[in-house]
Image (tube, rainbow, N blue to C red; front, side):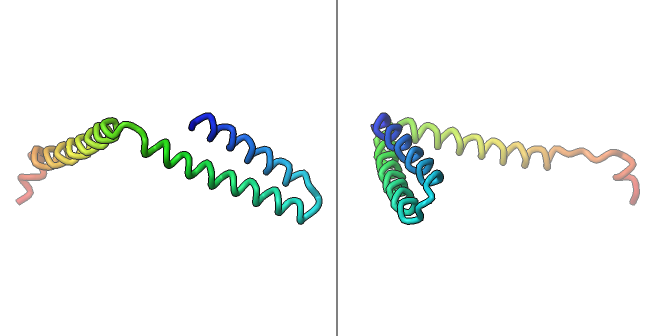
Length: 93
């Protein structure tokens, strides 16, 4: 699947390069439409690749991100609570 995507990306790039070099507007439009077709094929195939990846990998990555966010939030709360004001600020009253 990945090799197919790579081949289609190369073909798309080739078509776009040809379209840039072509003076005929009709031919340019045809080449760009063909390139767009390859782009859609790559996107579809990439979606299949992404969905076939191990769900455990995805779950572990999501869990790690959630834990990192929770740790960052708790660290911020701890910093707010442990802040000690200097004596000159507290003695202004």
